[in-house]
Image 1 (cartoon, rainbow, N blue to C red):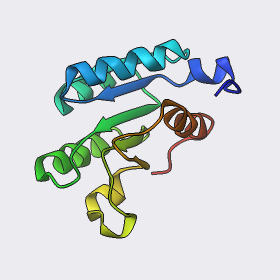
Image 2: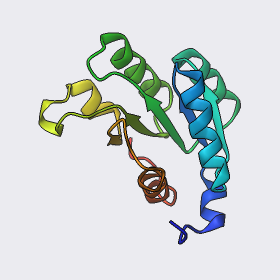
Image 3: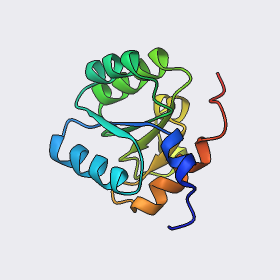
Length: 133
């Protein structure tokens, strides 16, 4: 995807939250190779601390949509970061079968095996508009 405006990309700092450090680091490296400012957090607690220290426009959260603890993490991040866009990775189910927490707290859902271009398209779509309350 070569039509992404470099200024737009730099304007959108991203925080990748994933307990799998290798996967999170790989995604951050891939985003950085496309010009994004991106950081890693390996837990909700680390994500909240990072977001307190730096304003992130978007948060990419890898989670198991069937896990109560992952959904609680998502709800906690949403309540602490109301103006941050949240993209959830791992939501393979149809929208109708997703939990109310996931539908309410996530701004976008991506299947576990997403393309980098698909993720960048989602991030770019958020970049010029504030998140509604």
